[in-house]
Image (cartoon, rainbow, N blue to C red):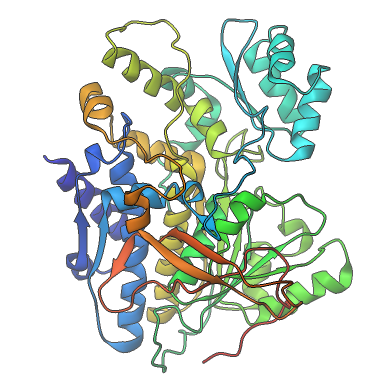
Length: 499
């Protein structure tokens, strides 16, 4: 079987598993050579183009339900790789961001038991919490010295107790023995669950874009959930990104993932602002959130509560480790899940074999070259949301969509690994980050203007952004890449009129 055939087989399996019509699959075109699209032993090219392709195919299917006309959707493997590393390629007024993508302490460190841990310190309170545990200065050297007094899993457990973000380094074999791996066994990367009854969605319109008139509340931060919301916006949805004024932001990521959205802020600890969100829910079609399981339910915005307020809603939920098992409430990010579940070990072993150094007892961790779990999970979530929207048209009901980084990791692992020579000799490295942009990046980029917003005037001239254009190419209704807010809290917390 060729790798491209495997990609089609996987796409077909995921499409049919979500009870979507098989005849639509003939409109999906997977282009390029996924096995050499990136220099990794894991099939990231396939994962990228499958997840992006399915999200595009689902939106084309929705448009066919609304208009009767179906179109083709293509996804090139190399373009998809640049798409799932989009935060690395954008420019503002011809310049790349000067701030780093990651905090200077966020890294892999050796531990007392001759193992490793990965620290995630990109948010200030997470960084300070780790420094409080380690009782050291905020330098990589001091952190490393302090960690040599800790065993890997002991620090992982202590950090979890304090709601911080640390994972111990494990092999696939070690992860398979973990209770959380047992809880995840058999969990698909996308889950659709009917959570209530509702009439079929009114389908008497003629939209210009597949999701035109669809209203999405996006309560997500960092990468995976925001990528999902950005995707829905590219397909024409009115996506209102709601962040909290009390939580730290990540402007280097936010500026890329908020493309096409409107941005506002609400403090859900204040009753009037929580009531404002409740009013928005009444006219929403999708409620997208990436807090830990149950986090928003405590404030009255769990899936069941949403379905009562707005029958027919799609409640989309992202978590790190899933909805069952001892780690279901544990905080996590792409890099942490990679380390905990065996990917950094397996990638390191493959690279050691390529370099003629097989048989290492515990190779030094090697991260995947892109944040694949985050981005692929974001596109799977967009696919799942649109599959659920299609169901509201064809059969009605309220729906919950669940995606977790760990379940996506489990699916990626199931694809198998490439031979080391294919991965690291033939696999194409990422372009260099440079100004002017690498020609490959420039050829796949789109120019966007800064959105003025309706909450305050933009001081000075409007900026211009270039970014990797959406890798799902729709033959009739291309992605809607026009504006970017370029900051949070630019818009009023209200819906746009339905066209």
